[in-house]
Image 1: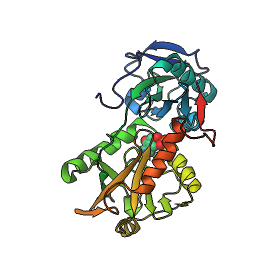
Image 2: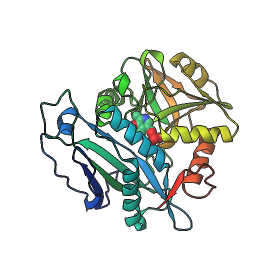
Image 3: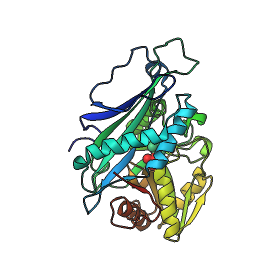
Length: 331
Ligand SMILES: *Cc1c(COP(=O)(O)O)cnc(C)c1O
């Protein structure tokens, strides 16, 4: 099977901002993009993106999950990066038009069509290290995907990291390229030294998130996750899972969680932990590695609440359960 996100639909849709307005979106080959080598993005990382999915339903229709939320976040990321303002309505139409054009290629569940809107600063001005790009380009890529983690993958092993930051604290809620490059060093080192798949960034003992997914702790009928602040990425999957957890009668606590409390709760046999994200969906965490010691979470395998929450989410996404929150956009 090809790796997640390496297969692309041969066309994308593109709009350019010239400093005053967005151009009429156009379909274009998705294997090239002509920008000046001095473009702002290539030097000063003025770039942000989104990741969302379209799903095929049993009646053959295709629906995009939480398009409005992802558009709002792209606009917010762009604002925080001083990129030109995103036109959410225009960008929404670009996404719907592109998915509609390739609707036949949307895989059946558990596969889906991964959608990657990207916004980059294009002004050729290498003297602008401290000022924004006047022009930009917004394009949308499509990638048919299967599961991110194979079905029989054991629960994840992650390193609890207290010293390193994932990114600069004021950049946490921005879905911007530089943040991932910034987390790569600590993540590669953790894999090499501790054989872990991910790093859970907990600066000063404050449990935040991993490189590209949010962290949830489930202790009996209580779900604990960090309350929204500017230090971490506000996941749409996180928000959806919290909504469904309340539906299932769980008490949701959005608050600070310390490493000490995490380890104490993880030791209980029924405790569960999971990572949430569009790609990972909801993936169980089985082992925490902390200061060279291993701490299993509960029994060290996926627990029943994690499985139930993931099922509730994918049932709505794939049309097996009613869309009671209006999360789906038809294409
Ligand atoms: C994208 C992302 C998430 C998950 O967000 P979703 O909207 O659920 O896909 C979490 N953390 C980081 C750092 C991310 O980049």
